[in-house]
Length: 95
Image (cartoon, rainbow, N blue to C red; front, top):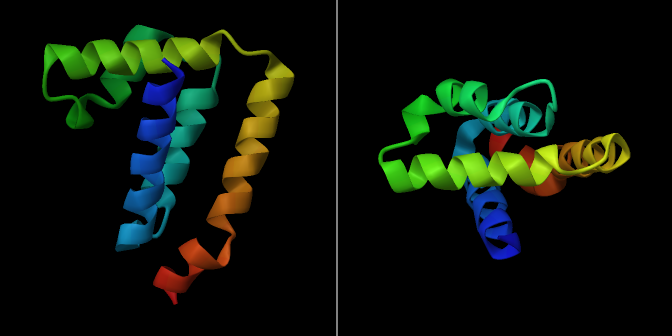
């Protein structure tokens, strides 16, 4: 499960590097770490990225990993992601 989380985050970061301007990445991360969003709501919000039942199940498990975390951990994760957004690697593509 941890490997799945790392791979999904790596894919999101690569998408950011691929000239998304990081807005899509920021929105997805915010939805992922928002503990007020349930798994069914999360899947619905990200439906355009889910192309199979296996992907839907993986997204549900991915969201559950974050739902299992404390508020403090989620806050720290959000802070870490904002540090990534503000890094030279994301800003380099938007300049």
